[in-house]
Image 1 (tube, rainbow over the protein chains, first blue to last red):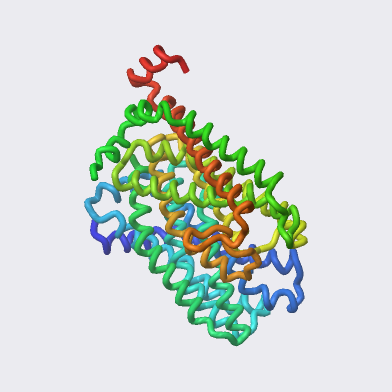
Image 2: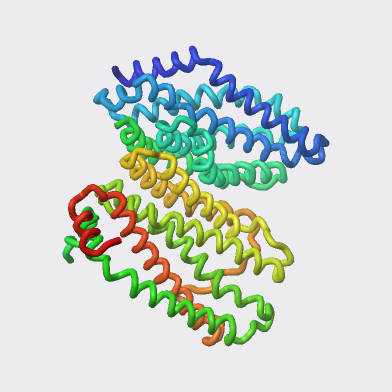
Length: 220
Length: 248
């Protein structure tokens, strides 16, 4: 096994299990739809709340997708093969996260113009929403993958991962929604985007190593 | 400086015999200070000229809130120690400390709410400090839930250490981010560098109750660690000998 063959096989697995990715996206749309139905469907409420709704739904959908990332590999033993492959485990995990991120976030971005129309998001906020999703979601994946690796040996681990990881997602949600609100109000928002990027980069550095520790402990 | 004491932390047996005589005096000293601080603060300290008697809750709220943060710092540090040096005592410490930290965060939230009602007119506001203590409580609950649901001891040790370290790295970011949301809470009551603005008869009891609560928690944690050591090492011969000689 080499790094490139691993990456190719990851993409192949994602392609052949399209349904899992679809499920995450459908879940995302349903959560978004809950807010207009459950609270208020008037533009007066939705326009200022749209960014927050999209981000909360995205966080939940991404956590659902990340949570099951190692489950199948753990059950069929390929996670063990990664540990004994002689390649660097943190690097393999990094590649896996990148593949997963591309598979989940790119379709999510494609759906965004439609959803922002449905939520009456003002034009001024749309561009920033896309930017926050692009540079904010990597940190969601990197933090979430730690929780996924820690709980991979538990049968019903989804709720535990939610409890464990959601508190760490708060800063990302706060910075993103503040940036979008600032853009809608015509204020400068580049500082908030820089903070998002900093968080993504920091989690990129720390998370693969932490996840590798967790994977090794789970496999043994 | 000799590092021998640090390497000894790898041995639960050494820690057990070393710490045997510590918890009781530390606990009693803590209770003593706590009683003095609370009695002085609640009954004898002068009332605040703005807030009247409702300010007296700081004699509970401030020590508890300080403990809630210190406990997490301790968890993160011991998680790091475990990941780097594989000290056997570190996960035992995490297991003993996490529920106490969670209780401290909960008491801080509840006492803050009780104080907020007469002062701010509301039980809860989404203010930076309140939110960050709430998140801190969630982090503690996450660690406890993770430890309880992992059956494999080795994995549970690693998992708790990993999540404590990640939490410690994230805590400043969480704090900074919630500060960006509007803030209503007053500034810190105590700082090490500045002379307190309160008169001495108001801050002295607070100092007593802070020291008292720290010692109280230290005593309780030592006891919890000892019983955790006995549970984990129940197969080893020194534990059997210990129980035969001194009973439980």
